[in-house]
Every structure is written in structure tokens, then in C-alpha cells.
Image (cartoon, rainbow, N blue to C red; front, side, top):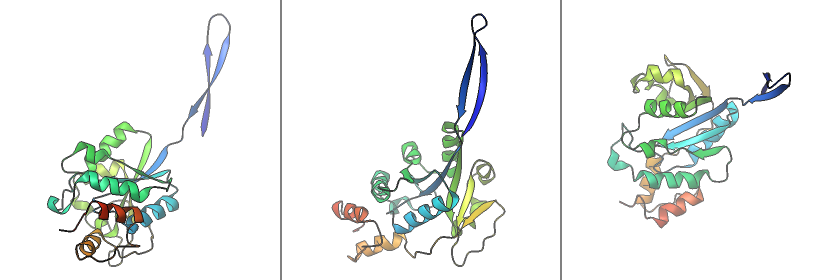
Length: 213
């Protein structure tokens, strides 16, 4: 915490000393994605990155309409957001960011981060991506401008080289071979997803009969 002293003259010779406190910048991680559904792999990545980098928060940010995925494969964004909220419950490091869902349409990271930086100019954002996504950074929408307003955090994955023309902080995270597509397939086949997703997410999927078609 940085404290500075300002001296202000009032009526006559009275002088008042005012202590002005400047709050330190918040360091916030962003884990974006479709979360269709959220699973334990997402939680492990967010927790490991948040703890290793000493972040104040890690925000899970479900997209409204993924720009590079067939929209028919993603269920209603509000259903996905509700599952995320259940998945992150109980971890004070985690929170839900609804910017992309509230804005609607295709979710481009650049547009979202410009909006967040405008609303929270003193926050430093760390955008968390997998090693496979790092390789595709040159193809991201307005990537050169995006790289100026966020710090990318790459999560290492086997088979992907840690090479990119953009600055990336690499964080080693235990490899958990779980994917949302695998979970959807298991649900469709009537197979167990216990210990692959949080219990609250499993219960939500069953309650709302998701992914059976």
C-alpha cells in the first residue's frame, strides 16, 4: 500500500494534512472458454495459475458464441454460466465474469478486454490459455493490440512447443486428460462422469437432462 501526504490550505492560516491512500493494482487472471461443461481440468488450471502467479482473482469467463466453434455444439450460454458458478463455489480465488454473455454475439477476446480495461483501468489482466492455443495466437482477432493490454499465461501441454512471437508467461500445471467433448460423449452414452466434473455440475447436468442428444 502506497501512502502519500497532501497539504491543503483552508481559511486563515489553518493547514490540514490529508492522508491519501492509493490502492495497489489488482492482478486478475481470466480463464475464458465455452465451459460446455466446466470440468475439474478447468479448476486445476485456474487454481494452479492463480496460486503460482499470486493473482488476486481468477475469473471464469464463459463466451456467448464461440467464434471458431459450431454454435450448435454449445448449449445456451446461461446454462453454461450456471454450471460454472456451481463449479467454482467455495473457492475465494475464483469468480464468474459475465461480460461476453451480457454483450452477446460472437465473443472476441480483444473486444472483451478493451471493455474490461475501460471499466477497471487499474487492473492488470493475465489471460490464461492452453499450450495448443499459444500456437494459434498469430491468428487471433487483433492480436497485436490485444498483446498490449493483457499478459498471456500459457499452460504447458505435451506435444506443443513453447514458441510464439508474443510474450507469454509459462506455468507448469499437472496434466489432466479431461475435455468437455469427452464429458458430453460420456453423458450421451450413459457413462459415469463422477470425479470428472464437480458434484454440483454433475447434478445440474442430470437435473436439466443436458447432453443426452
